Length: 409
Image (cartoon, rainbow, N blue to C red; front, side, top):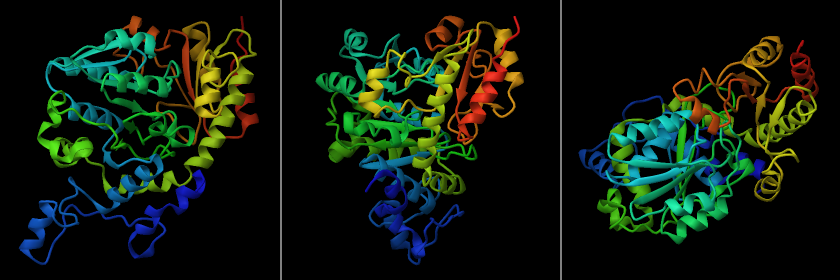
């Protein structure tokens, strides 16, 4: 099936109860059985079923199956937020003394989480450019994970997933990617060698900014060395399935970061229009970036522009789609605020991936806890705006931002 057909006609749609075209919302915390024997079997994974929504739920299960089918994975597990997906994934793999290699350009919340890991004896090495030349020298016998976003939010640097996966695998390491900004419409990371992926599905997957959620998908292809990955050692009998087995039956379930059934339902509804929305968002973002690039006093960063250093990689890896985020430098904080305050259609709000165009001044909001030097590494300066482009009419967006950027000298 092609992408939009799969969203509506995938095999997991046929698993909905009662022949529904949408999953039922099972807003129940617990499930009863007719015999003690059956309840015991469900608890011990010897009988399919649901016992308690913190552990599993029919509506959440439907969402997990849909995303897993879309990404081509072995299994998926939904979480209460995108940060819950990131943190649970890494904690599932790591022990005290282990090390991560990642990027300075990551989303601020992820960078803050890495600092928390230091208290548990887990070290992260951060590079300015997430490429083979920068990552390779840092790999040592304590390295356990290479973690990266694919298109960084907010710098918009683009990672060559295939090259990084080949490097990781040559050292028997898994490549874990945050695919939030690309979505499976732009790229299915497992096709290029990624091993585990996460989404903040609060963003493009849900699409309407109405449900905080996250999801983890395991490719099931990585061959775990249980002498090195001691966190998974008790699950060695599952072999390639050890990561998802531990996640489902131990760490995630004990941390309690489950997704509510109603939010899972909103994710499924949003997922069905992902292809249409992303096509429009990418078109609008490219058109707006191209228009703003011609405005005096602005510096535009967008991976799909011919002027971008990542243009060739975007053509090859993403079929020319540059995503839905624009990084805009205005020349000063005052100009940034003036531009924001003159906008008529865009909402001044955080989040990305909404139907609506959203604009934020990152330095003192979403990056307020990150030091200025680190902010500069992620493309956030005192004159930076981040634009998450929506599905409004292209001409309206261009006209609105053009009039707002008509600075008075």
